[in-house]
Image 1 (tube, rainbow, N blue to C red):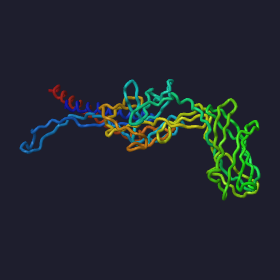
Image 2: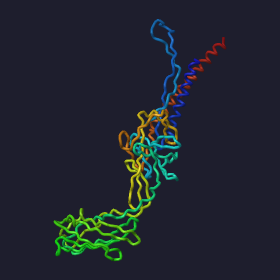
Image 3: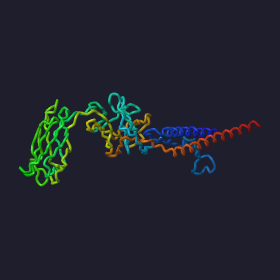
Image 4: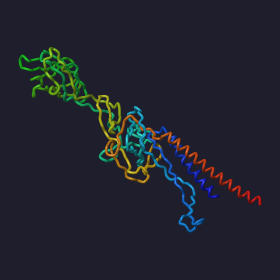
Length: 396
């Protein structure tokens, strides 16, 4: 009977620990990227004996000594996606862990809540650990150093598109802006004069600056409604006010036609490859995990790519708080980029919710409560039996 008390106590102790695990799961219901755990129970050692009826048989008496708790098992099932609108929030859709580095230690997380610190490094919003990038198989940091401004680019080519009607005598394209190497803009006006009576399909091209001064000229020629090779571009040299000299090619070779359309031409500016200097207006991640910077001049640039890690056996991961995991056995992780190999893709401006199933936790809680009650009832019953034994001696 005394052994029954000890067995019942193992039940009370084990179910108390099990309730702690359930409580932690429920408490982290709204923790970003949290993975729920399950307590593992195991029966304790047994005492065997050949004593008893049928002593000549091979069957032994086995008396158990109670229940104990083993380790906790993490559930890495995917949590639901939650859109945040924050450019630096990232969700992993599938296998993978973000890699964090701080004070020489490497940890891992599913919570992609990132921000830039005062030194310009991308860090985990909770712990301040730096988020790792991956380049050539080596880990690095994301930094805004050298990325806060986008240098200007001189215009080298201007492409036009539309129809230059053969029935039109003159057509103008207004407010064409080009840039020199310092990003200084120059506004141009281009006039197209029909010279078909002199040279079939010919158009004189004259370029004027904002003050109306001619700054360049040339001729293009059309045949069968398309620009002729060798006469499909005009090269001009400009010196913008307070700027540097720049050579610009006016290109009509690809998307320009010259079909009869009365006196109405639709020729207009298509694309030009120059731009002024720009300042950083946004930093974000795309769906392939690239770090993308966007500038006030409309330019975007891709830099490092998010590093993801995964383990052949996730049992090596140990929860250490702050939404992080440690590699407790030193197993070498597999490193890669989002969407490649075994790794899941990423989704920008979203976070992964906790994967805790509240209904399942409530069911586990009821079972744990009943187990605790039953174990306590064993203690009560054993105590009553011992009391009856003592009472028998007292009445003798």
